[in-house]
Image 1: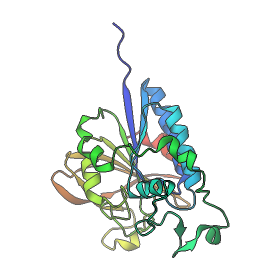
Image 2: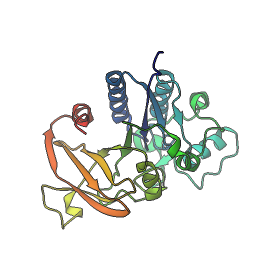
Image 3: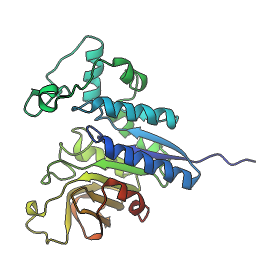
Image 4: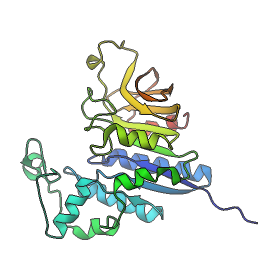
Length: 268
């Protein structure tokens, strides 16, 4: 009897504005799935409709939806607000996807249009019926997550830790990462800009990830610093039962950007 093809689920957190990094992650997913002889499924955990590159991010997400059948976009309040806007019921107070830099219009700030009028683009993959984020978290135990990956976007502010609302899963913070870390064996933090000046108790050879909640016991973490000299750090931490600090020792130094993560992530 022919064996059923295995499905590997790749979960991607906030992607707003990180077009190059998202393309790099998708390229890595394609290669990883091919090496596993597995069918890939990508789940985007919201954070798509935000900032001045929304149209570009939307194009990449739609490409993933076509390339990997069974992929999905999970709504957060930003996506809900945008759908309300498309249907003429727009309340601007809970979201800032159309503005940036202190409320200045994106056209004024960057000289480019966010092109939010292309409603057909987002309607292709983001539906009113797509599952709310909390519903997915509640059913996370139902996912086949053996060997799967969870990609997390790091904070733009180096003094924000992993439980901060600016960091992860669109203001759900530690509760969301805690829920997903129950089922995800490998968590990759990308586009992370650390500064040890914010952690005076940490020496220059150590990168701090701040508070990292997990109930799984051991979680493998890969942190990527996209500075001029890109540093990679890896750690396995026994963090069962609460929020603790994990400090990562840099183990390798690359001059390349996020593409360097492709070969290093395989070491996890």
